[in-house]
Amino acid sequence: MKKILVLCTGNSCRSQLAEGYLRYFAANKAEIYSAGIETHGVNPKAIQVMAEDHIDISAHTSNHVDEYAKIVFDAVITVCDNANEACPFFPGKVDRFHQNFPDPAKATGTPEEVMAEFRKVRDQIKAYSADFVNQYVNKQ
Image (cartoon, rainbow, N blue to C red):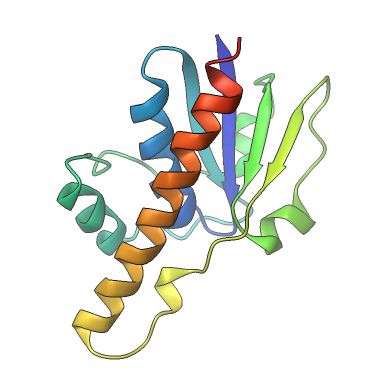
């Protein structure tokens, strides 16, 4: 079973969304982890927009990448440029993937406009996650 890490800056939004969708799409075909270069706590709006799509990430925790130093990953996905640039070295043959998504936590405007940005990023990550599982996980 492949072990996949999703890495972001704060492990609060984008990596949490990706972890939720990758777990959903991969089902029992991969172990999915998420972490950050820092930890900012799971953003309540990320939990809310995932719940709107019937995926519960309310039990997720915000983890620092160092917590997973002893796990041998098959793949690391960075979901923001900052994490890609600061990504630590992972020993062994680790496939690296990078896709920069906008940070919905930085959205401004009315509450409706902020939630619209969270939903937009959620939908982008959902599509990426489905494609990733089809192209990487299902081709074991």
